[in-house]
Length: 251
Image (tube, rainbow, N blue to C red; front, side, top):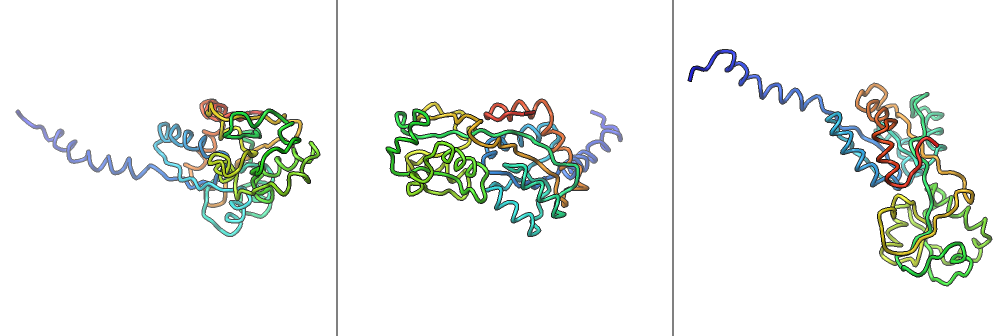
């Protein structure tokens, strides 16, 4: 079989082109509120399929992530569990003005691995349990919402001795999942796919809406990949994924 010079050139260039394509792919560093962990993993796969770029997420309580950002952590994007932290990021000169937007609105659930324990607000009023898990309200917006709910029901002072505090909503959920706490206030996204246990969907009128905002950080201001992910986060495809985890989009 006769091999043409063009074919030889093509074979020679193939590895070079493959390397060039790989070199174009980016890894985008993002700080993500713990409640959005599972949704982020699915979004990352969809984004990679669309662009070839990877996400490198770091999960934690919003307050803790804000502290890291304000101390110079090289994150390119911040996905917060509230709107206040991104606002402070921009005001402090760590984020890019005009890039902040609400990507999801979260919902609070009182959940127990015990299928008979949670029946509604009366579960809190009766107080027939030893430990209730709540995320640290100083750093986690879902924790602040939990305290607001207990205050509105008039049970916070009674239940305070029973509260075990998670550093983030992820740790709070772990307390409940492992039954180290009888029940706890968690994010709907954490239990939406569970068929076991018992839960009470806390009415949204009982706490300030948890508007979760995104913002482009200074290390990502000239990064096309970071900008592309924020644009993707606003897309119908991303909205469908986000809503599948129990969040509201465009509210």
